[in-house]
Image (cartoon, rainbow, N blue to C red; front, top):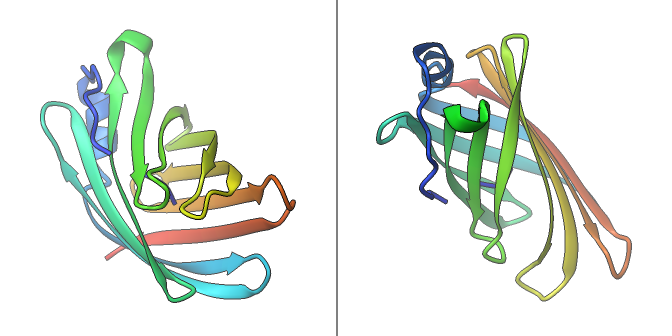
Length: 161
């Protein structure tokens, strides 16, 4: 679940923008975080039309007594013929760009990155966000603490509020 507004050169065609705009609104998600122990995760995400052909999002998740915030922008970049999501998380200043691929009615964004968390731990992060035909979203997160080998996994399905 990881997402900062940055300037993307986006010039989406009507079909690509219509596909993204289907996700505008408020979304609620509930899932489970597993690691050393199992914890419930509750999330809320808002998506809105941004400048030009961008879709902005902000989200917040409550887990293990903590809050995780994410912000970002999703756009279709005509020059490279692909969807891109710029993501920023309040944890460790994490930032990344995920490339989205259209698969049927879905758009699947995959992000792989190595970062340092707020405690200075070296962490490998893998996250997949699937936009499902304008009707639902699914976020899958996997992190490995490279020094210890400990892992954290979460899956949070979202429905429109």
